Image (tube, rainbow, N blue to C red; front, side, top):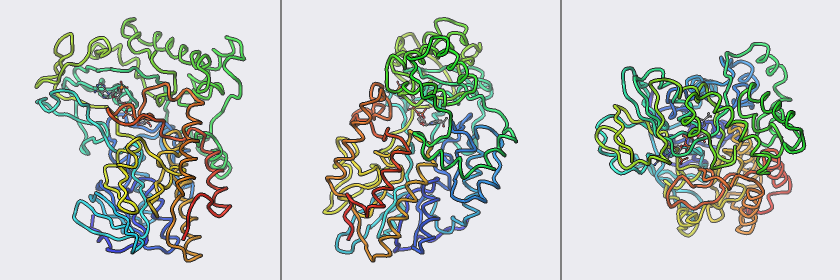
Length: 535
Ligand code: N01
C-alpha cells in the first residue's frame, strides 16, 4: 500500500477508519471540504479489523448490518450468511473503501496522541505518534466504542511463558491451536463465540469464568436467497422502519407484557424466539428490561435451556447466570456455546468458587490448584466508550483537559459534542444510543447530522460550534434518568464502566432508543440548533 501524505492543514481531521470514519470522510468530500482520516491500524474496518478471533461474527443480521446510504452498494453486495463472520465484514469494509476511493485520504498505522484547541486560530492542533503536527478546523472522533482492549490485571500475568492473546488484538496470520492446551479468561460475547471454535481444535481447553452470561443461539445459516431478495426489493422502506426502532434493528416487537399473558403463552413465545435465534429474543415482551418480575420469566427460561443442554448438572448450574437481569449485560449470541461444555476436552473453572490466585509460567493457579496450558486467550473486554477517547490528550478551550472534565464520567451533549471542546464531534459517543443499537444505523445518523451542521455553517460563513453547558447538563441528566427507569443499572456491566477498576460508574449509552434520539437530533437541527452556540 502506498503511503499517503498527511496534509498539514485541513478543514476536518477524522480519527478512525472504521465504519464511522469511512462514511464521515465520504460525506465531508461531498461538502467539498478538505478531510483526512488518521487510523492506527494498517487497514480500514475498525472493530472488524482488530477482532479476528476464531468465531468472530456480528450479532445483527447481515441484511441490516451494512451501510444504507448508497443503493448500488446494498443491492450489489451479497452476504453469504444470515450473520456475517468477521472476514466477510472486513471484506465488505474494504469493498466500500475501494468503491468510494477512500484510502487516498487515510493515513494508516498512525495514531492520534492528542489535540489542543487553539482559540486564536480557531482550529485544532493535532499530534500523532509519528510526530506530525496537523491543524484542522474540525475534529471528528470516530474511534469506536469498544476499541481499547484490556488485559486482566492478574498478578503474574507477565510471567506466563506461553503466548498471551487478546481477542480484540488477534494476530492477523491466525492462530493454530491444534494439539495445544489453551486457557480462556472471560465469558462475554467474544469468549462465547471463540470457545466452541477453539474447543474443536485444541487438545484441551480450560475456561475461567467469573460471571456467567446469558446467550441465545444464533441459528446462523447460509443466506437464504428469497430472504435476501425480500430485503433488496424493499430496502428503502425497511431501512426507514429500522431507523425508528429502539435498537435500529428491524425485528418483531411483541407489545404485550410478559406478565399479562398465561404461562403457556409466555413459554410458547420464548420458545418461538429461542428457535428463531438471535437478540430478538429480548423483544419477546415489551417489559423485559423494565420490570424485574417480567425479566425473571425470560431469565428462568434461558436457565432451563442451559440445564437441558449441559449434561453435568454442576457445570450447568455454574453456567446459569443469576447475578444480573437478562439483557442488562449485553446479551450474547452463540453457536453451540453451552453444548461445548459437554466435550471431554473442555473444563469450566468457576472463579466465584475457585478464584484466581496468580498466573504462573505454566498456567493459572486458582484456590484449588494449578491449571496448565500453552496459550492464554484473554477475552477480557475493553475500556468501553471512553477508553480510546481518553487515551488521547484532548485539550479544549483554555487548555481544559477532557480527562479531568470526565473524571466523574463522560458528559456530552447528545453524545455528539462536549461543552468547552468547540468543533469536536464524536461519532456514537457516550450519551448516544451507540452500543445499544445497530452501530451502522447510529453511525449513519451521527455522520448525517454532523454533515448537515457543517453544511449549514459553511453556507452561513460560521466557523465555530459548541454546545452550551446548560444543554449538555440537561442531556446528561436525561440520559441518566431514562437509564434508571430500566433494569440496566442493576448489572455490573461495561455499559456502567464497572469492568474497569476505578472507572466512574454510570450508565453511558442512551437507552431512550434510536428512533426517539433521532427525532430529538432532527428537531434540534430543524430549530436552528438550540443548545449550541454557533459563531
Ligand atoms: O468483553 P466483555 P467481550 N478475571 O467485557 C471477564 C461486543 N461484542 O469482548 O463479567 C476474570 O463482555 C469478564 O468477567 P466479569 C458486545 O457489545 C459483540 O466479550 O467482569 N475474568 C467477562 O466475562 C460485547 O458486550 C460481538 O466478571 C475477567 C469477560 O472477561 C462487547 O463487545 C462479539 C477478568 C469480558 O467480557 C465486549 O465483549 C464480541 C479478570 N480479571 C463482542 N477481567 C457480537 O456482535 C475480565 N474478565 C456477537
